[in-house]
Length: 482
Image (cartoon, rainbow, N blue to C red; front, side, top):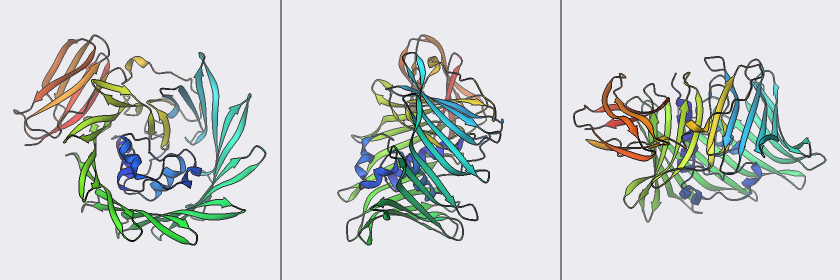
């Protein structure tokens, strides 16, 4: 079972910043009061991933890059029952409660403080007609009790399409209106628009509108973000998407409205490997009437096509240089076990906080803030003990980097790090799973290492290199291109 959901979801979070609608990063919809800025794209982080309702808005208008999440129960009949999120500031444990069908009923977060877990927040969900979410309450632990903070309410039409959702906040005594979202669809079920309204002087006032345009095949070819000023809708940003004959997205163009005309701002292109999986995302910025490289994102897979890494590189002094990366560890059932984020601070990778997108078969896409998110699995309808994963096998301690250059001919460099003196093997496989080269097989000292791999005796194609340190293994892909 290929774990391509995380590939598309993480690339979407990045791609939407670089080729679609750059809404501001915010945990709550009130942050929509300011005009979004493209400068955030130059920060080099992926912290502009759209959390909460902002992500929901953009995802609804980008079905071509944001895939539908499959059934909540994965093939083994287990769901994620807890997620341990580590940040540079604190450690948070999310304990998830499900009903017998796998629907999330509660998400309780606890902070690790003074050697014990203490209550922090509580999200509880109410459903309508089975699987449709009706309300989501967010509460915070204050003075020994759960106190209301905000709530989300969802409204559906007769066919089950979500046509509106409201975000209200608790003023200390009662619920007060916050933001209101209205959704419209075409006859094919594609989202045509989402209008954001705010409650001002006892009336709802439109503030933002996000619109989509689709081709005859149902692919979204354009997205438009507008802001309401007085009685007029004012253009802000326009994104255009392109596809090949097979329906694969090739890239996108982001334009900014100058007041009289559209002008180039950013563009991106998506590349695929020989297995047909998303391999690269390159973004460029329009500077002094020409396109200039800014970012390149590389995705690594194992032999079965499961995503194992996302590497972000920045164009600097005429060359691509490592900047940030995500690492995904899978268990034997090919489920997401741990996701980590780090930044390159030569001579090695250093853990850094960002928004971590967790999307497994047993869990709707969720966003957590930190450098590490570890998933533990349980059975729906049962209470499971919380199991804390060992830091010893954290990618913060060992790592395998994407080879550079990639594709390559005839040689490339593979970087990796070892947490302690260990027996290390580094082996190269072809697409049939056959070992073609043993690069390393011996004891190594702790610290960063690199090795040059010469493939002049191998034919063109996709290859996989696997690093094994003790019982921990990590695999990535590379391409020999003559």
